Image (cartoon, rainbow, N blue to C red):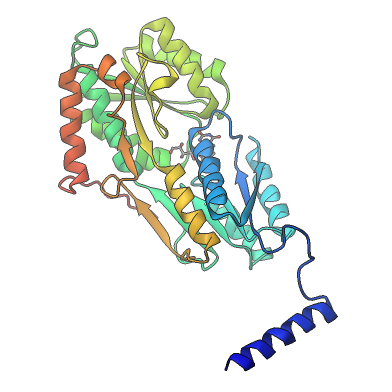
Length: 343
Ligand code: RBF
C-alpha cells in the first residue's frame, strides 16, 4: 500500500512537471488565497472594519494564507463588475464580502464563474453549494437598541416627556432595514412606552456626514432624545449634531462608546470580527460547510449590548443599566427570543 501511494505520488510529480499542470513555483505556491471585497469603503463603516479585521486574524493565525482587500466604493452599480473581475482572475480560493444585498450579486457572478467560493457575512443565501452565509439576528439587535432608547427616555437622563420619540438614521433603505431593523427598534421602544414613535430618516448614502448632521439636528429639534445611527461615515455627523444639541447617540454594529464619551451612551454589537475570523479559518482548513446559511443571535453570543465598559457605568444611570441587564439575561437564556425570519 505504501509503495502504491509512493508510486502515485511519483506519477503526479512527473505529470505536473512534464505537462505543466501544476501551479507556478512562486514563493507563495500552496498558500490559501483570500480576496476581501468591501462593498463601500472600510474606513468609518463598523461592519467592514470588523470584516477585514476578522480575515486578517485568520490569515495571521493560519500561517498559510494570504489576503488582498478590494474596496468596491460607493457606486453600487459597480459592485457586480468589481466582484466579477476578482472571480475572473481565478486567483482567490475564497472571496469574502458583507452586506445583505450581496447574495444577488454573488449569484450573478457564479453564473459565469461557478467554481468560485464565497463567504458572505451579514447576508442570507441558503442552499448554494459555493456559498456560506452568516446573518446576525438583527431583530434582537435592533430591539435591544429600542429598549435602551426607551429606558433612557424614561430616566432622569433626559427631561420628562409625555410620549417617547426616538430617531433612526439609515444610510439607505433595504429590506432588512425596513422590514427588520426599523420595526424591531420600534418594538423595543414600545416595550417601554406603548405610544412611543420612531422618527425614521434616510441619508441616501453611507458617507455624507454633513447631511447626516442636518437630519440629526431636525430629529433632535422635533423631540427625539436619542438617535440610532446606521449610516457608515454619516455616523460622525450624528455625533456632531448630538454634541451641539445635547442629544444622545446609539451605536449599532461595533462597540462604540469611545467614539464620543457621554454622547454615544449605548451600543449594540455583532461579533462580525469573531465570526468572520472563525469561518475564514475554517475555510482555510477546508472545514467550512459551503451551502450552509447560519443565523447567529444573542443566545449564541454573537449579538449583544455593551455593558462591560467604564464609559457605560459613568454615563448611564444605574436604574437603566439594571433594566437593560435583565432584558439581556432573558435573551441570553433563551427565555425571550425574537425570530429572525427571512425570505
Ligand atoms: N453599512 C456601513 O456601515 N457602511 C456601508 O457603506 C454600508 N453599505 C451598505 C450597502 C448596502 C447595499 C446595504 C444593503 C447595506 C449597507 N450597509 C453599510 C449596512 C450594513 O451592511 C448593515 O446592514 C448595517 O450595518 C446593519 O447591521
